[in-house]
Length: 114
Length: 118
Image 1 (cartoon, rainbow over the protein chains, first blue to last red):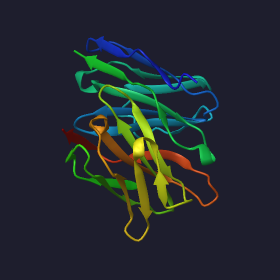
Image 2: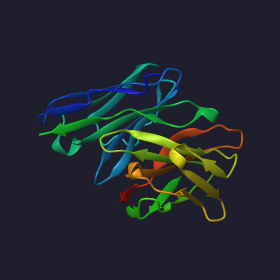
Image 3: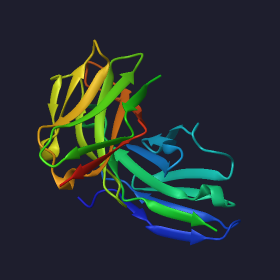
Image 4: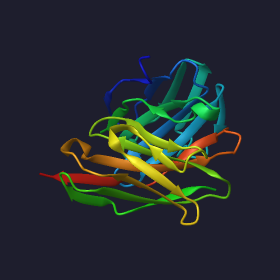
């Protein structure tokens, strides 16, 4: 299994531009999570899906952020327009349910907004 | 709601010494508890998890943790530190059930950076 795959690994963009982060979860996992990690705020849950349905998006900072999961093997996190304060490492994680519960994280996307 | 508190943002030990990283949790329902490790520029990797079975849980790389309900703790230990253990460690909690079903999101602590000196 290739694990959770995120792309791109690094993204540098100018303020005001649209940014799209991508995630491919582990096959068979029915939970998908998007986290943001910064030095100041640590790991923050942005949104999570169960069986492709958004369950809790209370961590999404504002309307500039949106996430989709069109099918079981793909999810996107979009920021439009981006701002310097969005600079962070964004992690995607997936998990099975029941006794198989336990996140597997991707390697993250380091976003820098200048 | 669930929360975790990791006591000590930085822990420093000598190579070969005992590693003890502290985690206390708060949960309104029986919790599932996890420890993750993060090496520089990498994602988080699961070390071990407690899911209401044995209270002493053994994980990878020689780490173990003990669930103590009376103390609401889930401290991580390793008898002998190795240089390769230097990393950041995160404790996390989720809702759980005696039936083995977990629910939803993990809530993470703020992390503890472990430094190992030669």
